[in-house]
Length: 90
Image 1 (cartoon, rainbow, N blue to C red):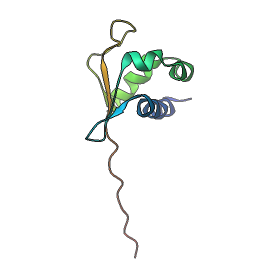
Image 2 (cartoon, rainbow, N blue to C red):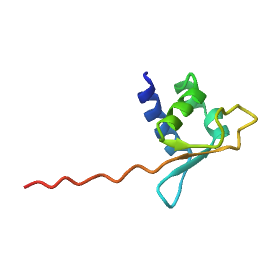
Image 3 (spheres, rainbow, N blue to C red):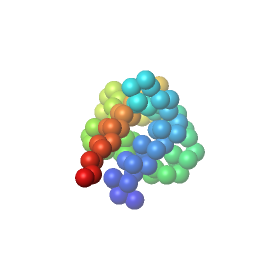
Image 4 (cartoon, helix red, strand yellow):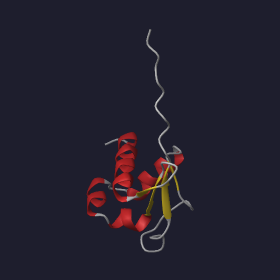
């Protein structure tokens, strides 16, 4: 799985585990992601995938490096998907 595929899978898992917000974003804590069995089986390097997604501006969280235990309560926010653009057909 390449980085882009991992980021897409991470988005799916955040939607599964997180709570949707009024603005369409999803929030989940690092601890919930880290301790989830499905995520543990999907992501060899969850922290690396989170950093890649943050770099691509797909999600936000405070800090640079998240560590299990120390940062379990850090909130990760998956930004809302941009609205689909309707294509006019004539």
